[in-house]
Image 1 (cartoon, rainbow, N blue to C red):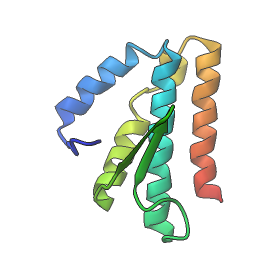
Image 2: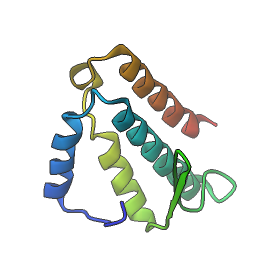
Image 3: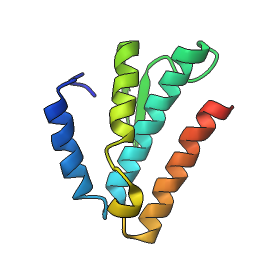
Length: 114
């Protein structure tokens, strides 16, 4: 996200690497928290400052990263991040990790249903 790249080759390379690591909970947790932060920012862009956040705020463990992105790039990155893992039925084979993934999807959907 910090690079703000739109290079499809770099995003495809990331997708390939991510799909090789879906058996690690840390990867799915990082994916989930990044997608949630992009979703909260996209909600603010769509519905105004009373909803969501004014920048992308990724909080993992004790580290908080605030990233100011152009609105258009927020949606681009959101779309790319959502598709990194692909079909979880094919890419995630451990039930606890699959459950955490689905919990993340539920949180993403609920951000728009508030």
